[in-house]
Length: 114
Length: 252
Image (cartoon, rainbow over all chains, first blue to last red):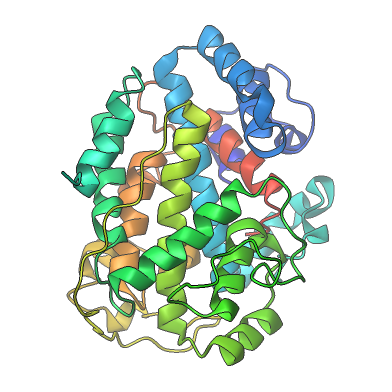
């Protein structure tokens, strides 16, 4: 949701499929492949984490890699808060997001509290 | 000599040889200072017992399915100061949060006897450990030990929390704000449901605001859709956030 908003605020076209699918470099999101590789490795393949970390540093710099690691840590926090407390979106917000549900497969989640 | 909680975090970051932002180090030190100290509803030893389950769950290379008991599988300490039912709940929150349902929440409360406010504090402990350990792991930093337990009684400071439309747990509504919650509510036109979720325990709100401000975006900057620290753009931040949330199958 915030990704769409931050892209729209800058008149940038963004395919939200990038969130779950194959990342592509675009004007909207620089270094998307390296960023998503870091996230994917941190969840699914810890052995490839050093490689993903190094690739992001090479494409950006150490400070950017550290900030990306911090954002991952933050959403490890936020997802547990949302799902541990049963937080759901207000109806008006759900309505404004409804066009994202199908393409992103969000309604398949057990945590889809509508 | 035992290291202070802050020293544990600072030495972990300094020994990495990486230039970790000082505000991020300070945020992790802040939650480490609270981790083993008496909280609002749990003692220091109980809080560390919860943290220990989170650590074991995060280290579990082959987690058990969400419907099985981690304590009965022999993965968790049998001599814990918290019950095996609560250990199971913490394990599931740590590794399978996306599978939690309201029915599970009600059954968990029946079996453990925890109050909603005690559960909110358990979430706070869990996210403190998850934040510090996952940042260290992803950045390639040695993770800190848990601090030494501090003796003392929980404050048991209640808040005027009420049933909520958008949560399983009760929350403090804007019109009922207390001095303890004012720093997190004042001046904001609205408080997102996921932030309000922890409001029945102000110390948990403090943990969320402290970590969120350093790891993601300070709460008052959230509306600036081009906010950046000079490293990641806002869109890059949100891509990482969305990708991780999708992996965790978090609808919210």
